[in-house]
Length: 130
Length: 130
DNA sequence: CGGTTAAATAACCGATAGGTTAAATATTAT
DNA sequence: ATAATATTTAACCTATCGGTTATTTAACCG
Image (cartoon, rainbow over all chains, first blue to last red; front, side, top):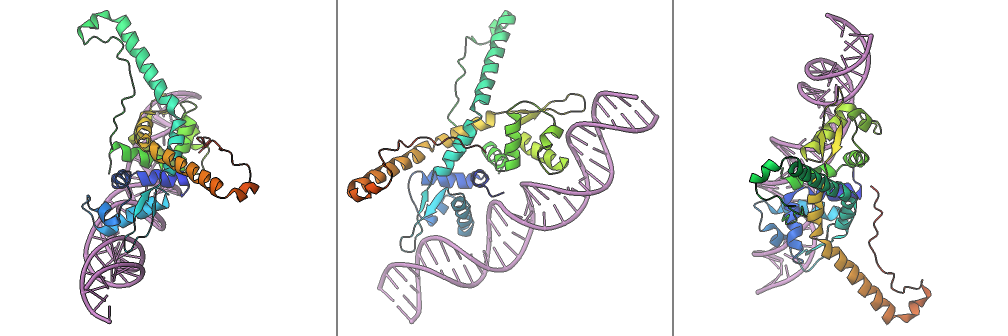
């Protein structure tokens, strides 16, 4: 299927392409420079760029013999919107875990031997680098 | 690559699988019921479910001969965290668009013929159903 | 002009994705 | 034990993916 959302998800389902986007987040650059960190041929990188371009995640300009690539984040916004629809589900999971932990602590006070589990304040772990 | 993020993105890159998740968001259900809306064979759906399971997006129980599927949203939280890193880029784009529109309006007042472009208040479009 | 550099395209290859039909498995019901 | 129902597995097929090397295109430079 080649609907926009599927194209975008598919484009993001490859660590090389995500690394390319991360690099582009620091600024426009050439194909050669983009390819440098990877131990793969230029045509391979070129194909990755084509996938990203088809998904609308990058655009390419022209400056002499260089084709500078630029990040286009609009499709990422669609992804964000899609995933937000499910936010309640993971928050709800945390709620359930909280309830469960409270219940455990309440019903079996002999587990006080473990670390003081006084409302660990389950919060967004974040820090998902890459 | 089979890192968690890639597995999750790949699992989401198929409209059938996203539809299955949407269905599961309304509650646990059987494979047969999940398969019903699609004009494809049961084994095909079974494969989709295996992909979702491998990505951690669903879990399966056992109740008699049924294998009820349940949505697990934790991987979606990882997706949300990843994409949030790029939020500034699409917001920045809107800013640039705003500046551009202001500039246009300011420099060429003869375009007043178009609809009153008085700060359209660019806001999150949302409403991305599927 | 000829040479160099940047990038894309062509042709190929093995692995995987997404579907099929047919057969096997697991559980319930008779 | 047998049959019925729900689901998975096996085997197969075609298309796409992600990579390669070799070639071609595009733009600069001297």
